Length: 139
Image (cartoon, rainbow, N blue to C red):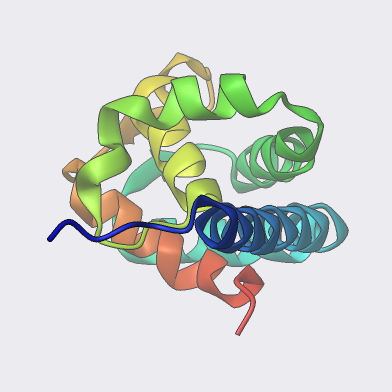
């Protein structure tokens, strides 16, 4: 005998999950915006320590990352998803902000005149970025 699903209960569960996911997303964006300077400083230091980026101006890189972290909160969801699409499957439970910053480092950072080179593969860069940005995820 076929099992009958109560679509009303299923819809409520799906809606509750969607609301929770959206609340987490908004919380992460808010924390990123509020702490952009501190996160950018920590991120730059970690990237330099791990040898991911080589630059001739740490101050310029700090400003680039601060601007990037502030800008992401104003972006449309489509634009963020479009940017992270190539590396979305890099981790099992990825932080979308870490994915965005990782993709920015991979694709766009070399265009900056203050960047000499970027080293590492996608997963290595993501892990370094996530090691800093994991603090913005709700517990």
